[in-house]
Image (cartoon, rainbow, N blue to C red; front, top):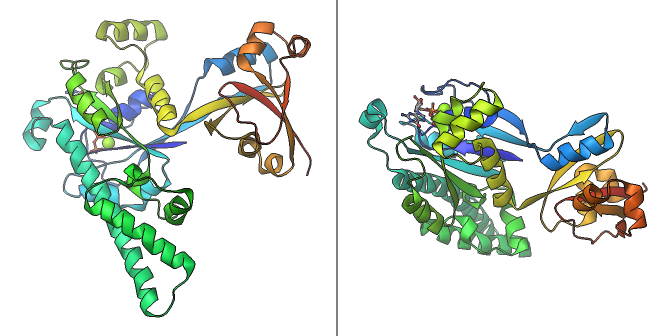
Length: 354
Ligand SMILES: Nc1nc2c(ncn2[C@@H]2O[C@H](COP(=O)(O)OP(=O)(O)OP(=O)(O)O)[C@@H](O)[C@H]2O)c(=O)[nH]1
Ligand SMILES: [Mg+2]
């Protein structure tokens, strides 16, 4: 899962990136080379830790979140939203500056997070509009030249809807697209189609006093929360106990990393299932409502192709009964077919043959 931190210049993207990853990428300067900072963070699901204690495997593998921190450049802020780099992301986390700083206030103005969010929405909409209009022109040019198939006619219909929505300054994610419509435009990787959440980067003075602002952002349909990026970045390197004390002092209930991970799961509708054994205990992320055969495909395409059945039990049951043997005796061990919808916390073993 790839999550991209985007936003206007000096909103604190790199500061939050550091807070989230424990790294120390340079902040407070313009990332001139236009390359994102990238880190892969383990998602420390405590269920994996507990399963690992039970099975004592050679390897324990948590699922992970890849976080990319994109630079912005005030004069060329469009660049961030026009480049191809954002296309690879699964979701965006927009970082909004909600802290005052004498120097930044002078050069960028006093913080206006809502206006910044609208600016970003518009940049993304314009980027998508350019792509959709260009493609529409091409399809229609084809019609003039006599290339008219059921597919291109269908594509034109979808594109017309999309262009209209974008021209009305509405992101595509707000449109209800049928699966075949969605499939037609998937290849364009339009930005306003991707899930997006908002991280309000506050200062120590106004942290936790932003309900009104958060409400307005949520009314626009986004998941949004308040963060204290610089404060949390400065906690990097402290031991856990001190970190907790400082966080409690500021009213931070859980770390920015844990919060962003859980927001990302919520945003993307992800749940975890697990595979267990002496060799390896491992977490796998899937979207809620994925069936057993497709879930098997996340592990390996062979398991999907040759899927026979899934042996299945739940995390809660194995924790309660302590061993697979007792689970079987208690009738908590199930065999499920390919259409079984995998639940969060299911432990699967795939029977397959290729
Ligand atoms: N006063 C104050 N300054 C902050 C806070 N968070 C970040 N900053 C400062 O804001 C400046 C910009 O932070 P960065 O994290 O580099 O911002 P960015 O969004 O990555 O900027 P670009 O990469 O140029 O787009 C730095 O000097 C930070 O120290 C905060 O909560 N309070
Ligand atoms: Mg930066």
